[in-house]
Length: 335
Image (cartoon, one colour):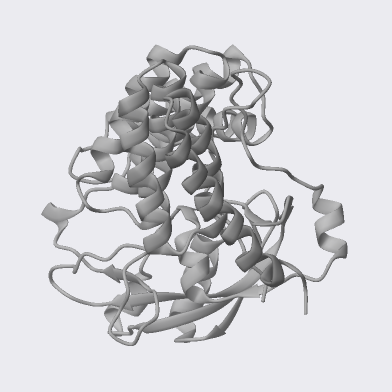
């Protein structure tokens, strides 16, 4: 079985110096295309979804009272863009609008070992005619154990769509922010782009965009930490944790927020606060079975504990990391 990690921003305290790097390595799209493209489950694809664009319900389908599920086969490029979409099943009137929307989705890159890879799988888009929509998120399990996206016709007074001009402004700065962080760039331009993206995201209602806000804050904190602006980075890390506390994120997103804040606190000399945050991050890793993230957090935590003159606690972290390396090694090689 292949094991994939999907948390992008992660900070590391190195032994040689206090440096922050992004623990994500990549390969070229051409190399990824040559290799066999792994097929993942609907659930795992859903946990990586970073940008969701809702399909438009065709007026002809509304008039004909057509609703139902559209299943799509997709392939995701190493950089997270959807490069192919094919409708597998579902009402004919709804297939094209589902395909058009999913082409615009963006995913956190998938990783196998140290390589960023392409993946494939199926996604389900659910169209429902109703007077008031149910609330669903990409990570919410439905009754049959799969993940779906619920679309519903809303009364006109309840429709709240993102202003296209605002969305365009956001994407203009979000692209260089994410590309810069993933490419390990340590420059002011990347940090500025991330801060602008965070500012635009803050303009949205605080009653929504929870996962998006947390993600933007983590990226911004990471970009700022990479240029050694730790105080400003901590501000955004605090924001990420506050969003997580609202209870709308998954284990991976929650771990990312607490791990980022914990490592920045440690680098600022806030040892006890960093220790507490890393312990919480590790708990989310264990709960969500995030082996790669847990190993990285444990190794960082061990060095922090040594600096706090707690060698026995540090050794316990190293021992757990060593056991984790042994347990995950067989699953990382192709069978």
